[in-house]
Amino acid sequence: MVRKLETTPRADGFRMPAEFEPHTGTWMLWPERPDNWRLGAKPAQHAFAAVAAAISEGEPVTVGVSPRQFANARAMLAPQVRVVEISNDDSWMRDCGPTFVVNGKGEVRAVDWIFNAWGGLDGGLYFPWDQDDLVAAKVAEIERVDRYRAPIVLEGGSIHVDGEGTLMVTEECLLNKNRNPDLTREQIEEVLANYLNIEKIIWLGRGVYEDETNGHVDNICCFIRPGVVALTWTDDKSDPQYEISKDAFDRLSATTDAKGRKLEIHRVHQPDPILITAEESGGVDVVEGTLPREEGMRLAASYINFYIANGVIVMPSFNDPHDEPAQKQLAALFPDRKVIAVPAREILLGGGNIHCITQQQPAPQKAG
Ligand code: KQY
Image 1 (cartoon, rainbow, N blue to C red):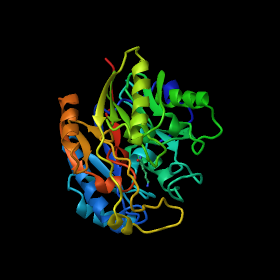
Image 2: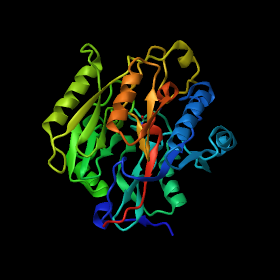
Image 3: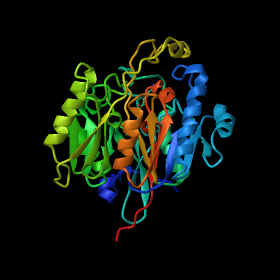
Image 4: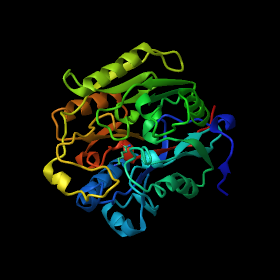
């Protein structure tokens, strides 16, 4: 039996492990909605399939697919990728999927946050989102893991943990009035402490410039290992991203993590500004209530939106001069993993990137 639990992970001795800890596998969803993905999502589907194939070099991958797209996804995805039917409103498993938690006794559970499509009726990205909000529960059922339904609106892309008690978030997202308008910062912190079992929260200010998620942390900064972070950066002081990244750098420099360590900060230079072309804009269906994709809009491109899997790092590339230096930098930061760059412009055009479309299922852990 899969239980819906009324306690909290902290009370039960569970914690969210870091992404760089061992995984059982990765979950993804399959893109199809034509008001977010151009040309009926076909170019995005090829990009998602390339991401799934790259991750599957290191661990099992499961892709949830609507009934309409099951046969097509099965045909397009590599044979080693498992395909299961999961209805959804769009394909952002990081955000609507479960946050898995583990204890030291070999048990894994799921945290199922309330999902409101990045802001509900106050700036959210589409309506309705009821199928997305069921995804975490469905994954928990498939995996036969017990589930906590957390009492706040939150997306997985808005949190990063180091696995040793530290959580990193942005004020722009977590304190946005379109997520939990009735809760104070302190009340949100208490829920996070109880559901992730963390001791210390590092609050950054804003996320990447023009990020439609209201500044998810996973696009601007992430943990490489405990005590070490990577931050998106630009040397161009006239770029609006400069001030945002500088503020994050200053906050990170001034703080310590849950274990009292000063952070080692690695700056990863962003790609040159990426704008939506007329052709790309013209390929997206116009639907009222969905964020428009207009020619000339700047996309929130960042190399930080990479995914850490067993043995591999899957990073976005943009056909940009900064691609190669970023790949070399990640290879140096993760000497024991193979860094695979996947062309990701088609994912970026949908509003996120590789980290946003993936969700790790950690391996069970036994202490001692
Ligand atoms: O970046 C993400 N985590 C999700 C972006 C959602 C975009 C919806 N159009």
